[in-house]
Structure formats: structure tokens, C-alpha cells
Length: 215
Image (cartoon, rainbow, N blue to C red; front, side):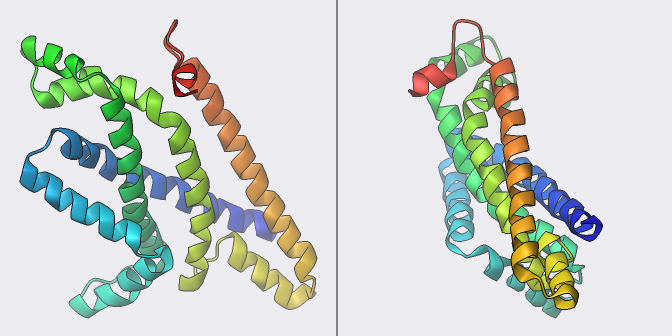
């Protein structure tokens, strides 16, 4: 169990770093998709469609084995985080784009009439509301990224699954180890989803329950 928990910490690190990189990409990308110029929307559309179309494991191989050909070397862990972060950014951008478009467009026009730029209106008026709308589907993205973190196994990163394989090679108890790994994934997913649900409830605007609107 100590060895599996050590691998679990690596899995959690990959998951949270991937989500953080994805969000840093997704928020400006979603802004560009809704409020950007036409040429910007075209470029963003290419990025979003390409990254969502390529399997995550292929993206990791392209980064880890392809970038050294142009002189860029990185560790397996970093390659995994960057690759999964770029892919998650494409998916998260669609989550935030939908959330932004769910906010009445008159609010942006009202912000502009008060002298705000598009960026100021987005930061101060639109995004705080859109974040509340995006939180439930973003929780699903967390679950997906957590499971995708196992792709790091292919690059030699000693995350939860690879640590389990090391243990199996010495204990010859594959069923027990894999069941334990599955239980750890379940506990992490259940705990974080419950935490995000609590945050969602806390952020509800009085008299405006987003979950009721969705239903």
C-alpha cells in the first residue's frame, strides 16, 4: 500500500497540473471563441478540433519523441503534463464557451456602455457567472483527466498504474493489485466530485439556482 500511495501522489500531481494548464489555456481561448475576431476564431477552431481529434496517448508520444528532433528535451513527467494539458485545454474551452454563451449578451453590452472594454466586461461581469455554470461539466472533465493520467504509464512515469505493475511483478497478485488500484481511483473521484458539488452549492446565487435552470 505505501508504494501504491506513492504512485497515487504522482497521479494526483499529473491530474491537477493538467487541469491547471488546461484552464489557463481554456479561459482565453473561450473568450476568443465568443468575442474574438474572425481570424482568431479560425485559429482557435483549428487548435480545438485538432487536439480533440488526436488520442491522448498519441499526443504524448508526439511531444516526448518528436520535440527532441528539434532540440527540445523534457522529462517524461513534463511531457505528460504538457500533452494532457494541451488536450484538456481544448475540451475545457468548449465547457467555458458554452457557459459564456449561456449568459445573456445584454450584460456585455451593458458593460461596454459603462466604459468597460470587452476584456474588462468579461473579467468582471461575464466570467464570474459563467464559472458557476461551467462548474458541473468541469467536474466531469476532472474525472476524465484523472483517468487519462494513466497514459503516463506509456512514457515510463511511475504513477499509480505503473507502480501497481511493479508490485505485480514481485507479488504475482494481479487481481488484488488491480482491484486496489481501481478502489483508489474511485475514492479520489468520489472525494473530489463531492468537494466540487459542495463548492457548486456554495457559489449558487440566492434565488438563481443554475441546476434548476439546467433541469
